[in-house]
Length: 108
Ligand SMILES: [Zn+2]
Image (cartoon, rainbow, N blue to C red; front, side):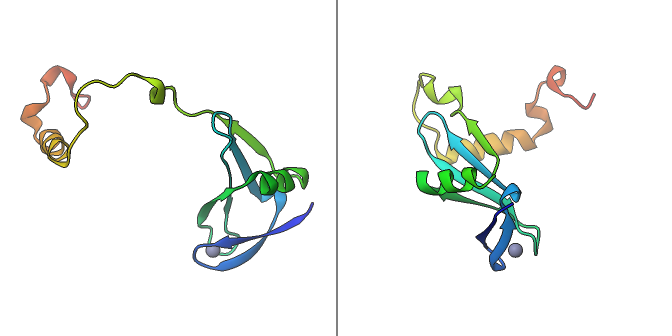
């Protein structure tokens, strides 16, 4: 098992076995990344990875996951974009028990 060096946001450079690194490549746009859990502080970290880094990590034994962008990105959108005021109004309505119809509540 090969060792690789990665950078933890809290600890700096750390050394990992390649099977402790997960490589992900998006099928739709080819974007690559890798993720790991720091062996020192256990923080999860993810970093972008170009094709060369993806190839090296996978050839050294890192597991590869291919994923797709969510189908919702292809849905047609109608109406104006949400504003901060829309979001605030929605938040206030969610906080008000009277605004949620009784039949929609899951705690009854
Ligand atoms: Zn760390």
